[in-house]
Image 1 (cartoon, rainbow, N blue to C red):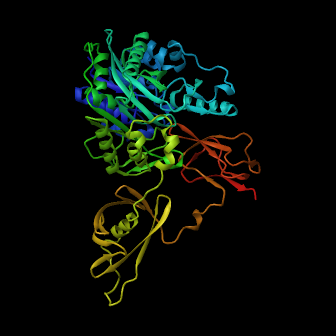
Image 2 (image 1 turned 45 degrees about the horizontal axis):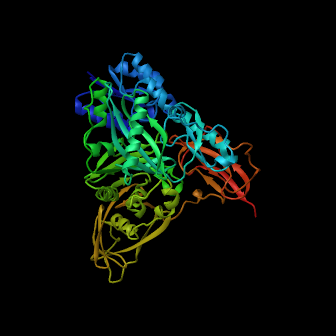
Length: 614
């Protein structure tokens, strides 16, 4: 019997596993890096063990340190979560060799399937060895791990070597394994997968299908179960193939077999020998706890002959601290408040006041809605996200809401090219024009003009705000009757609530302020000073860091004085396990290079200056 579980992971998945363990009366052990010393997963566990350092390579990818932590804390089992070492056969062996239970598949099954190259060979598929123009476009893919890291689409043969190098670097950083391979890239197919659960007695459950077609940078954004619109024949085919793959390697535990569906055919992609991020939608539809089932299987208990019956439809959205309008750049800072109204499930590794750092994945939470029909589930999830209170770094919340309400998605006609086609419309700013006024009135609450009132109109007060990248000015007056503003009637105003009558309709604005950052309902604003600071101005052609991160590479031969072309890569930043290219904004001359490889930079830091050719 398992009495104590160490989770060899962090964040949301560690918290999620701990929740089930606590429900089952199992003691929990966390591991944490120095960057995660006060993280939620370290706080909610019964015991936590420090892994010295911050980078994944020094902490969560150190299997030897994690095994030592399990033994020191008295754990008798290890759950790997997802990512990091979850598909590392050597780590699984080390856990077993230490006399601990491994809550996952046998090491030999991980070896057979965790490497995507070997998995494809097992399923009779060969990767591309010598890529030619006729093979384009192709996909460069990490052999280990997932989550979109180490994946690059290549459309020009001249770009292949550079993209291979970037993919290897990302894969090494995220998974400790730099092996990559190349395969044909199927455009605009649907990403469909099958959840499997297998015990040590020969029973394999195919727990329905999921559709994960809405992706950015090959990382899933919205997932649902069951996959809508599949023919009965195709549904049966992918479930049968998933069982075949599991039986081929004597699989045990939870896993996922992934396919790309195009032109009515299913193309095998890979088998993930671990729990997936999107497992909650399957749990909702089948009414089971997959982590609890993993624990029972690890204890040797058998599954029932048949899986439970599926009911209804479930959809999950991944809430990321990122800016889709700025090439999905990850965001950092304090998460002041996070709250999502029910009836939905919220899985997160953060709580109010936590810091979003640069070292790990930018996912803040998963929000899951379950309903009798797909239409109801979509509507419920979109409404919950729209009303969510998210005070902190920029997120993809608005993109999620618009994606869920897009006619292509509501009609279940989406594919993996969804964001390639629709992103400009989905990120178009639509700020509330009255939000700056509401912020100004809340700030003005309780203030009054010095001196007595006179029989002359007061001069308007003004406050300036930055909203959706644009400056707005709010104007209001103090009168004997209270606060007044042109064009609207102020029904009520205090520090946290403003009610405005706009054309006969009373609109409520909840206001929260953290320094210069103001949140009015779901709109984020920045209060601007009356007089701008001249020291913050930059010369034309300045390249500023779009995010905090580390400069991992500078283009060969790049020094001050060399000519550059618009769009030419100049340097690469690594943030949250992804590499981001910084390109020349114009054609001209590099007049200043302000950083070197290995240097840490903050958002807005000056990286380089390119002077445009006149």
